[in-house]
Amino acid sequence: MQPKLTMTASDWLLLILLSTFWGGSFFFAEIAVREIPPLTLALGRCAIAAVVLLVYVKATGLELPKGRAVWGSLLVLAVLNTALPFTLIFWGQTHITSGLAGILNSTAPLFSILLAHFATSDDRLTGRRIVGIAIGFVGAVITIGIHALSDLGVQTIAQLAIVLAAFCYAAAGVFGRRFKSYPPAVIAASVLILGSAMLAPLSAYGDRPWTLPMPSLEALAAMVGLAVISTALAFLIYFRVLARAGAVNLQLVAYLIPVSAILLGVGFLGETLETRHMVGMFVIAIGLAAIDGRPHQAIMRVFRGAPKEA
Image (cartoon, rainbow, N blue to C red; front, side):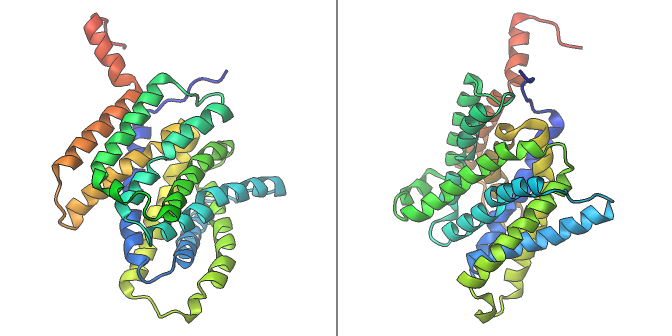
C-alpha cells in the first residue's frame, strides 16, 4: 500500500494559481468564440500553447519522450485532456450560459474521486473526502448562482457535452499519473502537440477556417491569452500538481475556478462582488478544509489540549 497523497502548502498555492489561469479561460473563450468557431478555437489554443512549451523545452535542454509505447499513452492523454474537452466546452458555451457551464464543470472532482478510488492505490475514497467534495460543489453552485440552474435541461445536449468534458478531465488526471517521472513541461508540450495534430483535420473539415472572415484583434488577443496563460502556463502547473498530489486533489481546482473568475471580473471588469459570491466562497473554503484535514486536526488538538507538533 502506497502512502496516501496529501497537499502541501506549496501545492495549495499552485492550485490557486492554476484556478486563476483557468478562471481566465472562461473570459477569454467568451470573447473569442463570438468570432472563432469552436474547433478552430480549440486548435488555436492547443497549437499556440504547444509552440510556447516546445520552445521552453528546447531552451531548457529537455527532450521530448521517445518510443511508440510512450507516445501511444500520450495520445490517450491528449484526447482526454485537450482535444475532446476543449471542443466540447467551446461548443457547449455557444449554447448555454457560462454560469451553467461552470456548475457542470464542477462535477469533475466527483468523477475524479470515483475513478481514482478504483484505479489507484494512493488516491482512495474516504468519508472526509466525500463530505468535502460535496460541500465544495454546493459552494460552487452558490458562488456561480443557483439561478444558473434554471436553464438546466433546456439545452440538454450542450449540457451533457460540458459534463462529458468534466469526466474527460477527471479521467485524464487519473491516467496522467503514469507520467509523473517526466518533467511537467515535457508532458505538457507532448500532449499539446498531439492535441493540435488531432484538431487540425477536424477544424479544416468542420469549420473551413480559411473561408471565414478575419477575426478582430480582440478575438485574436483572447485566443492568444487562452493559449499562453490558460493553457501553456496552466499545463506546467497542472502536471506538477498531478505528479505530487494526485488526481483527486488536482481536480479540486474546479471549485476554485468560479472564485477566481469572479475575483478577476471584480478586479479588471468592474463587476460587483455580491453576497452570494462571499457565501459561496466561504462554503468552498469549508469544503477544501474538510478535504485537506489539517484545519480539523489543529482544532481537535486545541480542544484536547495536545501540544503542537514541532
